[in-house]
Image: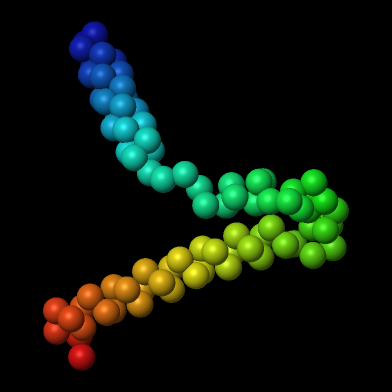
Length: 83
């Protein structure tokens, strides 16, 4: 019965290894760019009234999603998969 905890630990280690490998392959977050802007020092004070960082992050994510969608549609039309 000592093999069962060892098997569970081995499976957990393997899953942890696979997930860490996948995370390393992912690109850096595009939202880290706000911390290098010239207004980074006063941005917290502006964000108290208007959530500029949230709006920019959301706009970036939305723009990226729309760009990927339209690029995918163009590729499908070239392949004549959609009309």
